[in-house]
Image 1 (cartoon, helix red, strand yellow):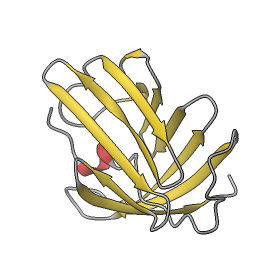
Image 2: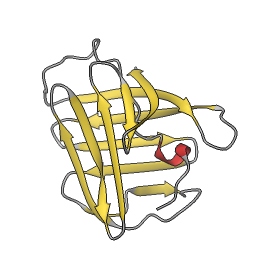
Image 3: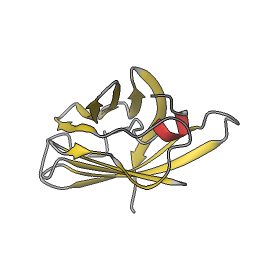
Image 4: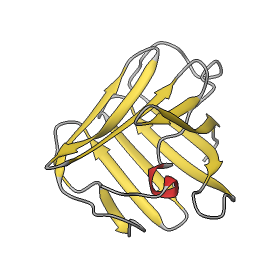
Length: 137
């Protein structure tokens, strides 16, 4: 699947020193900043992570994506991916004290997002794409 960095920005890195390191049943709200591909302008992405429900919601300027542990389907719930497809696949969300991992596996397509809870760096398929910090939203 071919996607712009903007469509993959949904999973940015987060300085989590401010966040409690123990995994608890609560919601983590983040704001992540990174550059979009094609213009390189700064893009702000809001993320909400429910640790008990194993749910990640990513709100970008023109796209909302939701990932739920064990669900089979398309993660895009509103807006459109700018390039490529949004094939259905098995979604996953894994949360521990060090890392939040989420993504989708299906067909010929795979997306792997990772947020380091200590440094705040978010990677997509192994590449650092953004920096995240706690949000009051």
